[in-house]
Image 1 (cartoon, helix red, strand yellow):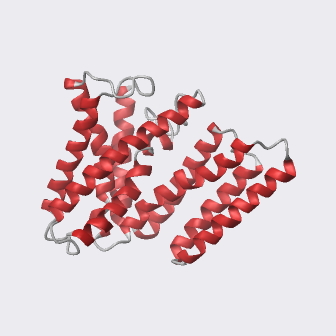
Image 2 (image 1 turned 180 degrees about the horizontal axis):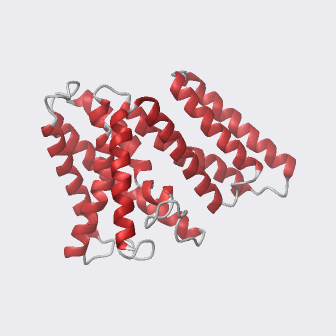
Length: 269
């Protein structure tokens, strides 16, 4: 299992480096695909992956990305208002076959998976985005690795024994500090190439530290959903890791966290 997980992790890392470095249409389409697969996995857990509200959700996900690609973001609110009206109409027409939880789950899924993950692409389109986008991975995968190592070495106090019995307070702190250090080193290394930020090392460290905290909340949230619905993994698409949401659960939170943290810090420093 460890060898399979390690091999899959290496493949994922190589793919991430190639796709994110290239950016543009390739990253856009990859983010869209991952969002759709992740949405399907969540809808499957909620048992709406094949029903009408789920199908509408997939259509809205694609339309949302079309709006992002064209830059006509003023239509996003209209899209979601129409989406809510549509699934509420389905709820009324099919009552009582369609339950309230299915309607709320369909609406929630778009925000939780599709919108949150789309910030990975949106960061890449920012000034210095080809560098700043890596902060998402440092505060997500980097934080996970640091948290795991610290937790294995000195972890004694459980932070959420019912929800995630293997995670410790020491590990969580180690993940936050580790992500901040990685951000500092990254920002310092690319300081001459990151031109839109006055002090890249400090900004990247703070952004990664903030995102690492939120990353762990995202990890716990994904675990809570699985436990509520008695499933071990969201899928088996990635050998040794599970489904898309099992691997990208923390990134759902770090992508928007980095986007807004960097935007806010640019106005402060």
